[in-house]
Length: 155
Image 1 (cartoon, helix red, strand yellow):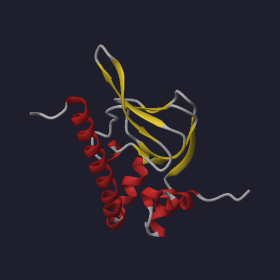
Image 2 (cartoon, one colour):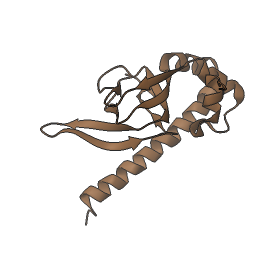
Image 3 (cartoon, helix red, strand yellow):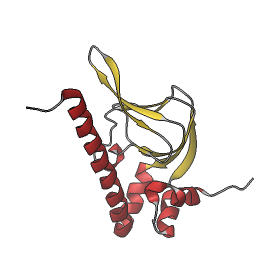
Image 4 (cartoon, helix red, strand yellow):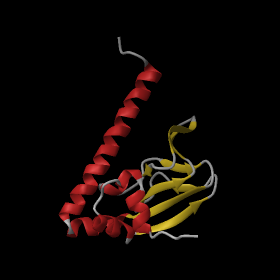
């Protein structure tokens, strides 16, 4: 069985496609493999957003707690997706929960480690920000479409 290094896994991941090899190595230096059993949480609302997750296998649901209604699932993520962007901006706290709905394997990227490397190498930091901003815009657009689906046209 061939074992690949974490930086190779990062370079092969769709989110990091085309990233310079040296940047994959920087991210790999902040990464570790994790396994989350069904029903386990990657993160919970209010906890420190001290890492983000590169999903390799399995599925994770993002959910918010609605008073009087319990958790409401609003997005399902799977292989190739990224879970967590709250690590990018202070106060670095999760604003919703991420729960595995099946056995999930992911790379956990230490946010403090990555922020330090981005601060030391602004070109690297800019490259990361472009990728994460694209992800944020995609998720915002998906949320807008969900709102239209739920609430219909404002007219």
